[in-house]
Image 1 (tube, helix red, strand yellow):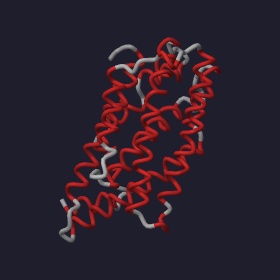
Image 2 (cartoon, rainbow, N blue to C red):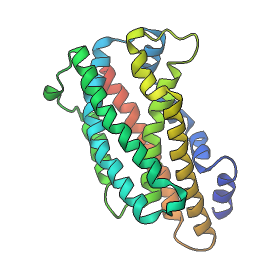
Image 3 (cartoon, rainbow, N blue to C red):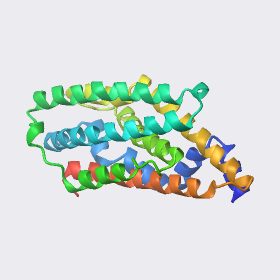
Length: 239
């Protein structure tokens, strides 16, 4: 286990190894039929509006989770690593994101005040709440944080590739998460997560408590991907 974990960290990071290991669920989350329908121009707009309202609810919960990750970074990371600055930048973006959701909801006729969270959304939000506890390791929390952001980046960037039929009225949606700047932000989060996962691997080698952290981070990464699939399913009316 010790040698394998260290070897994984040396081949592009533990996260890349896990994504290869769990490739099917990762593809399910980032190439979901909902996303592919946006990409090929066949999306059902009632499904899109459902996603818009439900994701607004989720993002408000995500703000609280992001704040809990920021506190963990402040307590546990070295200032020279720049973790808090990266996370703060993401939180600033969430302020703009909430304003964007309100603007889009008005444009699409979605009454956010009347939107009730559906089951998949409720379950996902409870999952986030479970990770806000001070007992949850920073390594686990930042891995989850990266995964949530990365799924949207990977998904919507796919809709901006050449030769797609993404409707003009959804280009702005795709640009919000598929743009290069958001991609760089996700890359920064991934670097933080990989650094901490490698440290957990090193701790395991020297006999410190690293095994539980690595196992927990991998399990929670998989759970994020599963929740994302269910969220897309909910938006399409298949969950």
